[in-house]
Amino acid sequence: MPGIMSGHTLMRSSGSFRYRLILKTFRIEGPLGVPPLGTIRSPIVVIFVGILALKASPAQECPLPARSLTERLQAVAGAGMVSSHSFQYMEELSDKIGGRVTGSTEAAAAIDWGLGKMRSIGLQNVHAEPWQLWRGWSRGPAEASLIFPTYRKLEVDSMGWVGSTAPGGVDADVLQIDIDNPLDKLLTDSPTWAGKVLLIHRGAERSPQNASNEYGKFLVSAHEAHAIAVIGGQGGAKSAGVKLTHTGILGFTSYFDIPVVSMAAEDQEQIERLLRMGSRVRLHINVQNSISSGPVPSANVIGEIIGTEDPEQIFVVGGHLDSWDLGQGATDNGCGSATVLGAAEAILRSGMKPRRTIRFVLFTGEEQGLVGSREYVKRHQSEMPNHIGDIVLDEGQGAIGGFDLNGRTDLIDSFSHLVQSISGFGQFSIIADPVFGTDTGPFTLAGLPGILVTQDTTDYQISHHSAADTVDKVDAAVLIRNTTIEALVAFWIADQPERFAAPWPPDKTEQMLKDTHVEDRLKSLGMWPF
Image 1 (spheres, rainbow, N blue to C red):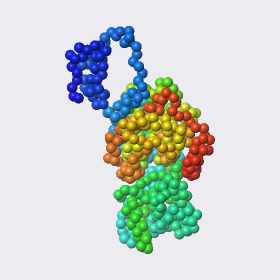
Image 2 (tube, helix red, strand yellow; image 1 turned 90 degrees about the horizontal axis):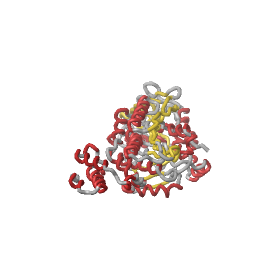
Image 3 (cartoon, one colour; image 1 turned 60 degrees about the horizontal axis):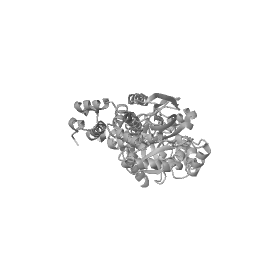
Image 4 (tube, rainbow, N blue to C red; image 1 turned 90 degrees about the vertical axis):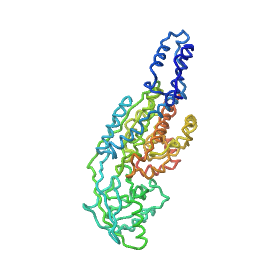
């Protein structure tokens, strides 16, 4: 409705009714009822100030009743959806800094950027918490060509934290390895690996996560057998997308001396077809990376909204600031970093103050094995009994469709009340399946609910860790919606009359992890704490 009520109409009404009319005027003037002050015509501003200046009767001097939690959530939702800067944050991080491998100069610039953004938003206690990565790594050139039975340039990129070929590269025959076979069976043929490029074939039914432990052992054995290089992504997976490669670490906090490359699926499939024909296949491959001789510095970025009633109780809103370097790190995890900052901004702009402290954390080192979040839990060990949990968005650019409480089935009923209250944003699922591929994991191990927002990952499966991880893959409307949902979850948990969750004792967490069959996985990653 474009117009506003006239001053004449207002002046004919009673004092109390005039006040309500002006509030109504505000709601019909601006987007979602929150008009910028600059859009109000000056005569109405004068009338508004005049009405507020009227001497109230004793009955009118009593304070306004406190807003209900629903009303407070409405204020957060409005602030989140109107004039959000989430997309702008993601753009700045991706376009001005770009790929941010932990320990690199770009990652250091991102840490400074995050500190500046938190301060400009208005968070309290903004600071960096330094930690050290066990070794730094930087990408050099990677190239490969098919040189027999025909010539063709191939699309390859190095995986992270792997070694190099001899300078200038090597010519070598290709030998296909069926990684689905047990390692001891594969090793019986290891004498034939010397001087060869090993092409990994892996069945589609095995996920990269489940295969990664055996794959790491295989890579060590391949280097010991003097293989030249390995073609195969995380867990030996083949790349997805059109002429794309996908980089990544091949084991948590692990370095492998043998060079390992991801090859575009079209090129890898040509080699596979030639091998099936019984043809000899020969490549030229050159990979040149650098590894530091010792630890390199990094840091987590932290800011807070201090709670009004129980400030010592802390709920963490987290996302990882680091990324890989083939693209801009927009979807993985510029989106997650932007939602952390955007959620903080939405809560502050709403004017609502939570009962408990909300701590906003931009972790680094996630791509090297959740290192930053593990360091956070270690550093704040004495505070963990006062932590309530954390929430993380780390599935890219897709719309939020649900929440994973990571083993805390005891919280599903209470969390469902929140899901019902935000149903205007859509229908959301609630599950409690423990996962350890992002920064919820260390909180889960501490007995807390590490809440992973689940998303539509159709496009993310192609964009992440690849050259396609760029700003144009992100829809601003979806990112703003995701940011607002994250802000609502954080505020709802921090503002509950009663504490939402407390840490489970270690024996209860241990039993949950055994019952959900993740014990072996955690042991293989070196993360089993019990």
